[in-house]
Length: 230
Length: 56
Image 1 (cartoon, rainbow over the protein chains, first blue to last red):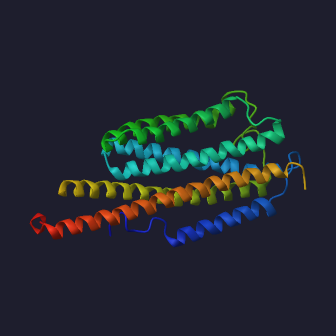
Image 2 (tube, rainbow over the protein chains, first blue to last red):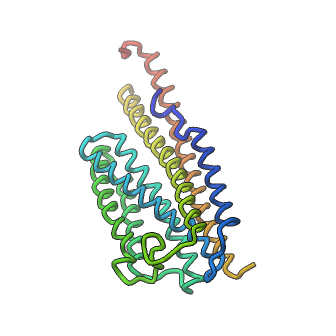
């Protein structure tokens, strides 16, 4: 079966992802206790933090695939890289927007130019530039090679964003996992369950995005054949 | 309803709207490309039938 006629997201994966997302929503809105100081708005945390975790994982897989592409020149690795980076950017945008909507009632402002927020915004801008660059280079080999370099550059920025509120004094809350903060065990469970559910959603979207890239390649090849025939 | 509930709803609504929007864009592009591929394959088939010497 050709690349473009197979099913991108198997039904069982879509069903498991849907069930996991529904379960996550149940846990976030109905099961986990309300945080004493912030109240219900703290529940944004269960979407905000997992979105960042999934985006970071996506940028790492995308960067790894980019390194693989530069050494093997396999178009499948380029497909994986662009899929992970694009879907990772979606999750990074969700992280930024949910962060702003949490900050307004808690800090009184949507945005603060501190190290964590600014470095996350820069990371998202790097991947926006990556996608614009992909659109602007026609030759497929050159496009993949140049974008692989940008993808690796973006991946290197991820640990800086992660460590920003450890290395510098920031308005952003201290890390709750592996840092000074502590979390109720039920909150920890919901946090990890949300990471799992959003991880599944990420993988479904990456599969669909890779499928789209395979279709583009098939369409380009057929168009060249038709042009050669005319 | 607690005063900061609206921010919670806003955050989840925007997040899911972003995801649904992205899925809609992906599905639209996939459908368009699948249709284009079908058209191109039909064009190729017509072309090879009209010019059997090109086959093989």
